[in-house]
Structure formats: C-alpha cells, structure tokens
Amino acid sequence: MNVFNMGDFDPVTGATKPKKNVDKCCVERDICKQTCGMTSQACHDLFQKCSQKVCKEDQNCKLQAMMADMMSPDPDEEPGSTTKYDPKESECKSYNKGQAEACTCVQEDEFRSATEDKLKSFYKKYNPEKLDKSDNIKDSEELWKKWEKKEPDLIMALTNKYKAKAVKRKAKPKRPEWKPPPKEEDDAEPPPPPKPVKPVLDADDEAFETKLKGLMEKKKKAAADEEYDLADEAKDHIAEAKSLEAKRLKAVKAKAIDEEDYPEAKRVKQRIARLEEL
Image 1 (cartoon, rainbow, N blue to C red):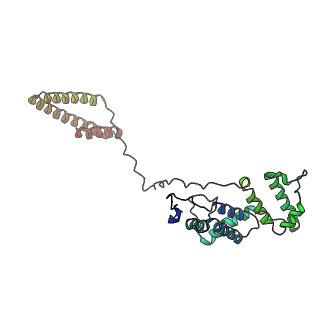
Image 2 (image 1 turned 135 degrees about the vertical axis):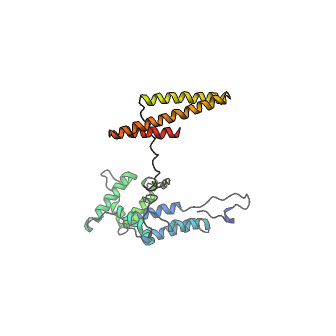
Image 3 (image 1 turned 180 degrees about the horizontal axis):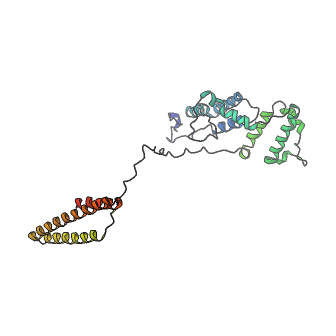
C-alpha cells in the first residue's frame, strides 16, 4: 500500500523520492519464525525494531510495516482457500507451522551433539571454510562458550548472514481465474426437440408426391407468367389430388388397424398429418 504525501517529492526537482520498504524486515521475521526455539514475541520485536530503523519518519513506509505486521499469511496457503478466518488462530498460524517444521525433539543429553551436527551440515553447504579436514567445526569450544543457551539466536544469525544462499524466497501464488460454477440439473438447458422422422413412402405415396410436385410447379409457372386462369386450374387440380389422396390414406389406415398392423397405421397417420399441412 502506498500513500502519497508532500514528503514523497523532491522540493527542487519535483521528482518522486525513492520509496522505502520493509521487505528486509519481513524476510528476517520469517527466518525467525522458522528457526527452532525462537519465540513469537522475539520475532515480533525483531520486526518492529527493524521496521522502525528502516522507516524512521516515513509515514508511507510505516503504513507498509503496519500492514505487513497485521497480514502475515501462511506462505504455503493456497489462494482462494475457503477456510474460515480466525484472527486468534491467524496470529500464530505461520509461527506454529514454522516451528513444527524446523524443530526436532532429542534427549537433553543429545542436544549439544544434535545442534553441532546441524551446524556442521549448514557450514558444509554454505561456508566449508568453517570446518577442518575432518568436517568438525573449527574453534568449536569458542563457539559454544559464546552461544551456549542461545542456540536459536546462533542458528538465526547464521541464516540471516548467509540468506542469499540459505533462504528460498517463494513468489506469492496467483489467485486462480474465476470460473462460473457448473449449472445445476434444474438450470441446465433442455435438449433440443427430436427432429421429425420422415415417413417411409410406398409406391402409391411416391406416385402422389410426383403428381403433386408437377401440379405445384405448373401453378408456380402460371403465376409467374401471369396466366391466372391456368394458375387457378392448377390450384383446383391440386385440391382434387389432395382430397383423393386423403381418402386413400384413410382407407389404408383403417385396413392396417383391422389387421392390427399398428406400425403401418402410425406411418399412414403421419402421411395424413403432412398432407393437411400442404
């Protein structure tokens, strides 16, 4: 978040001054949370001290620090999570998770050796010069004399010192593109109505279709040639042909019903319906 004020501008050139930010403080706070044995209060105090040192009197920077302190999410939380927000749980969620992943429980008498093994592994990876030829820590006694009972501070100090190599910074995941929810069955579009099945034609049907087609073309041509008498004559012939065909079809249908040939009766019924539409 950025808030502009007159202090953001150079009074001579009018240019915008470079913005301060608390990125360094956020990184160090997260290192603290993921260092076994560091307390939540210590991590909070560390962030406050760092942000005050960076921001000084820059109000824009202070606002960033306040928002970063309030909104410290779980870095591995998936975007678009539907988990109910709980301010108390959120306050310590990332800290508790960092501690759980960083800590390993050992017997008290094994604590020093386990910590030293962790240090050896760290130095071997990030600064081998701290180890001798046998992979033991140089000046081990001096190290323990200085850091005994402050082991978490030692681990955190080393991680901060070598954070360019030792710290993996994750990019903030992008929120998935919103997609409309799938339609419920009740809201789904109804399937298109089935296309009418064209009845199968027998020889008499085909003969009528051919005759009717000829009469229709004759009427159309007469009308185009303005031969209206011929057009009326063709119209009368069409009506007569349709009447005779209707009588024939009804007789065929009645016969089919008498013989219990219901598929044929249904076919003829469709023919009669089509004839009435012509």
